[in-house]
Image (cartoon, rainbow over all chains, first blue to last red; front, side, top):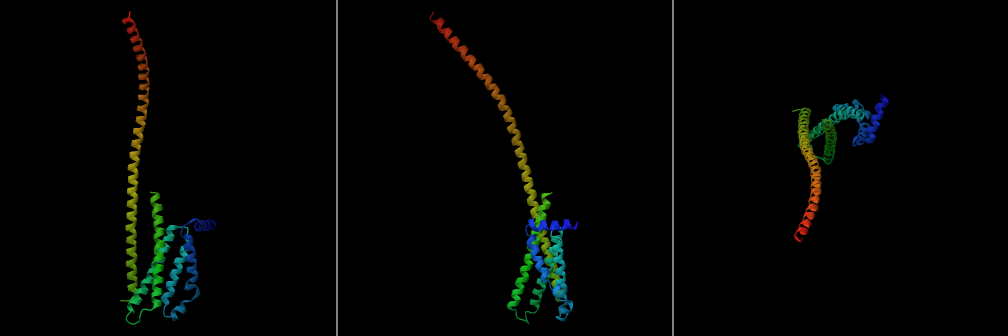
Length: 143
Length: 95
C-alpha cells in the first residue's frame, strides 16, 4: 500500500501539469516555515504568539498538499485552506496598515510586503481555480 | 472594533464571495456544455436523417438504372424493327 502510494506520487510528479511545480513550491514553503526554525517562546517574546500559530497552520496546509498531491479533491481542499490563510494574513496586514495610517507613515517596506502577500494570495487563488476547473471538466466528461 | 475580528469578517466575506463567484462560473460552464451537447444531438439527428435519405436515393438509383437498361434494350430492338419496316416500305413503293 505504501509502495502504491509513492508510485502514484511519482506518476503525478512525472505526468501531471502543475502538481510538480506545486510540489517544489510547497517543499520550499515547508523548509522556510518558521515553526521548524523558531519556538513559540521566541514569538511570545516578540509579542506575536499568534504569528507562530499562523505559521503552524501554514505548515499543516503545506504538509497536507504534499500528502495529497495525487488526489485532486483533497489537494484542492488543502489549497483552499492555504488560500484562506494567505487571505487572512493579507487582510490582517491591510487592516493593520489602515488602522495605523494616521500614526505611522506607509514605508517602502510596507508596500513591498503588501505586494508580496497580494501576489501569494493571487497565486494560491489561481492554483485553486486551476484545480477546481480540472475537477469540473473531469466530472462533466463522465456525465 | 478588534483588529482580528475585522480581519476574520473581511476574510469570511472574501471567501464567501469567491465561493459564490466559483458557483456562478461552474453554472455558466455547465450550461455551455449542456447547450453544446444539445447542439451535437441535433446535428446527429440531422446527420442520421441525411444518411437515411441517401440510402433511399441509392436504392432508387439502382432501380432506375435497371429500368433504363431495359428501356435501352427495348429502344434498340424498336430501332431495328423500324429500320426493317422502312426498308420493307421502300421496297414495296418501287415495285
